[in-house]
Figure 1 (cartoon, one colour):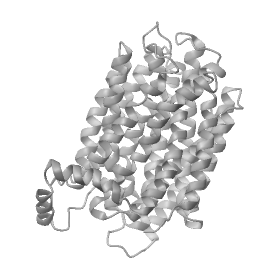
Figure 2 (cartoon, one colour):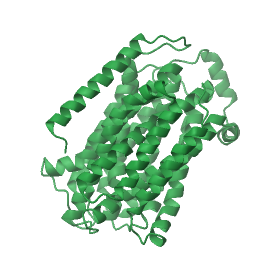
Figure 3 (cartoon, rainbow, N blue to C red):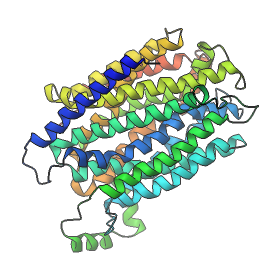
Length: 464
């Protein structure tokens, strides 16, 4: 763990980055049809992502552990993880479509979805670690992922709605910052509970340890409270002509029009969106390999145990959460460097650099033999994670029509969930039949995939 000197450097660097961005927000003047927001207004509108990522981090760091505890085999893990991408595939464009056509006089356009998703996700976070059998935990993963998507998808469109073009990179970087901070704390919780508060991190066969349960309970509270900050303290702009908006909403009402728009719009994607789709595919294929296989790979190849009731396995599973905290901490800091690098180069070159760092991080895991060595690998992964969460969206929103921002952001997320579905189908087969169930090779597959994504960045056209 970092020493006090390291923590001091973290605080100094964070203050410096925050101060520079705050100054930039106040002093930069660019003509825009949308008013520029202050640093703290952008802070408030992004704060809900801290809660969303708190929930995601608990899910990503502990789902394989929960499934294995409830007798899931390593080969079957990718299939059980299908819940996430499938719900995203179904829900994100639908939520985007309806949030484009929503206007509530008090809550606005996107905020009703933030709030409903947060309430449902908090309930699922409480139930999942108390699952008595595997099928219930898998069901909770479906509900949890659906709820996360209801909250998360409109957040991306929220930036496009409210911020002028020259502040969007900062807006998405701020989201990445909160994603990093939320994930650091959430990922560390099982380790902190077991090492600082003497809460048991082992349990009898088929029972989730108390350290994991309490982490999920805390996550439920943080998720809801963080989203409430954004709902209460952020403002959305009403449609320019509310009566025309209502008339258009009435005109386009009906199942026939809905299906025509939702599925027909896919054939009319902007060129930049299509180019980014290929980058996203290989980026998220790599990430899904990381999330599924880090726990089984690290517990077996670093800690030497596959017995979910053993001390060694659960220590390894706790260290996986520490590793996830490490890469998210790096991502939180890197998020504020991305706008600077993008200004000096371009957004697509910035993203390419980030993805190459991720490739190096993933490939290096194959050669690591100690727990502390894994933390070095997490640096590259963290830089890539910060870029994946911000740069593609900063490039994308400039190519989208204003009235369909939420819908196209939802469709764009197809290219997050499709690679995850592909990974769920093929990774288990490849690891079993090509690599004899040696899960450490998942990192090699992920690293190569990240290199391909980086090269494809060069083909992206980045114009507002």
